[in-house]
Length: 306
Image 1 (tube, rainbow, N blue to C red):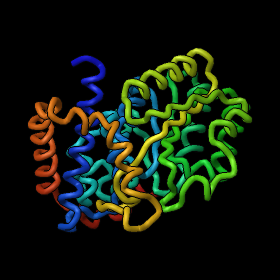
Image 2 (cartoon, rainbow, N blue to C red):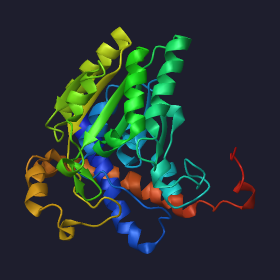
Image 3 (cartoon, rainbow, N blue to C red):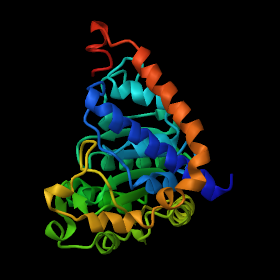
Image 4 (cartoon, rainbow, N blue to C red):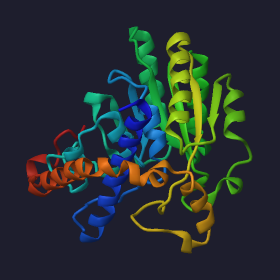
């Protein structure tokens, strides 16, 4: 596969995984709320394509795409959603707290903006220990309204830390639109902290996301300075859950359809169809692994609790 085809394969894999989650969710086998990335897959895929396993990634509760794009195990992900002991969090984490530290996915969090200072702390450690790695914090536009976001930007810039802030800007915080929440522009505000900012308007295009992020990574490795990459994107489904949400009245079908009209997973569906059997077989095996896996017993109750 060429680079574009490889990224489309990875994005299709994420979408088919989440479509299976939609199918399974009404059965109550999934023991966790889910925040789907359908429509936003190209962000995670384009970003993770430039990262090595030694580079660390912290992400928000909309974590499935980043977990899979960074190399997390699919069977362990489904087992975690099922609440099984073979899950990546031994059944305790659920969808919103996925982690795969063996491939550099250091964790997701349900608390808005909470992973951002974790990433900054990891970048401080990397600098002091002389590690050749960059640290990435991925979050939604709503996280930029939290105080810890501003504190983290200031600290990272002041101490010249190799951290890359990736903002998935879908213009929404649950049902609240950007204009109702922010008196600032994310890119302009970030520059006020002395942090270089790059914006990608075409978040549906994996090559544009990848090209922009590759440049950001190269500069971060060379300079050791923080950067921010803002990527405009669109989630097709509701904020939390498997359904549609147009009936809620805060956006229209037309808005979503404008993004879908540029979505390569839709536009090139016929050409990509040849990849589907392989991916679906992998998903089937992962779901079977989750189904067969045991539940945690009472010895797990306080294990790993500090």
